[in-house]
Image 1 (cartoon, rainbow, N blue to C red):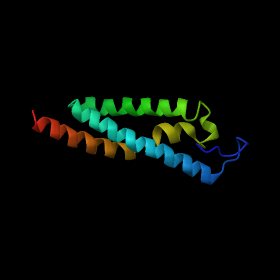
Image 2: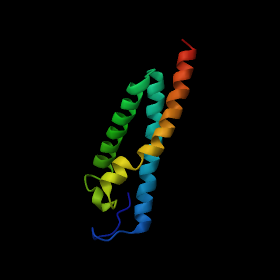
Image 3: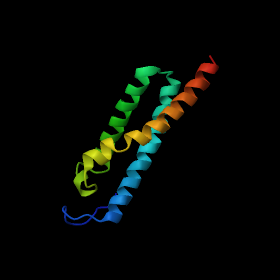
Image 4: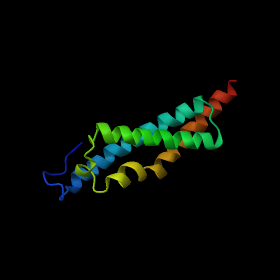
Length: 110
């Protein structure tokens, strides 16, 4: 993670953009992996969406603890929104795609 500057009040737009791109990459990969797991487990309906929400939350908590070491304000302007909320609309599309694909493959072989 790129630290924005030595002062917490001033941010480098370039570093903030890089941090957001790294976070988005983590969100993309985790949503695809969660979709694969949900498909293999043949989750249906609300259970699949709850699995996504819980898995996404756990991924974000791990990111917050490991990558930002609890100092997310150094890396993002609005950490709660940027880490926990902003990625959900785009991540759910990849999740549903993988969930449906793997689910169909598993169900067609049983």
